[in-house]
Image (cartoon, rainbow, N blue to C red):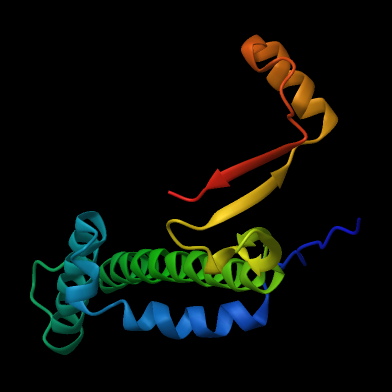
Length: 165
């Protein structure tokens, strides 16, 4: 029996980082950021400090802090918001990529369905309420069933019939 393996993606995979960067810029919209109250407050602080830095740059008041300090605080706050959005977008991209890989690997399970007393193979996804299926019990399972339910001891356990409910 062969096992399919998942291809492990690098954290720096360009197919994830490119869209994640664009998505992180889109997440700067206030209606997107407000879903995370902490980052919303940081973004408001970023906008306010950027406004103060621009004010100091254009018309410097006498009691204003050094221009480099206001600019550094504003830059740090913007970096925090952008990095948080980027990290969230990368995580979403990796999750979507992993889900797509798992969908590709999914295999259809075949059921043994009874139709008019005859056994037919059918995809398990097509089973509906009221369908009767056949399940073969392996020796180890049959022994476990006999030891767990001694009343079933000498009955014919190799074949069982279940009804989908």
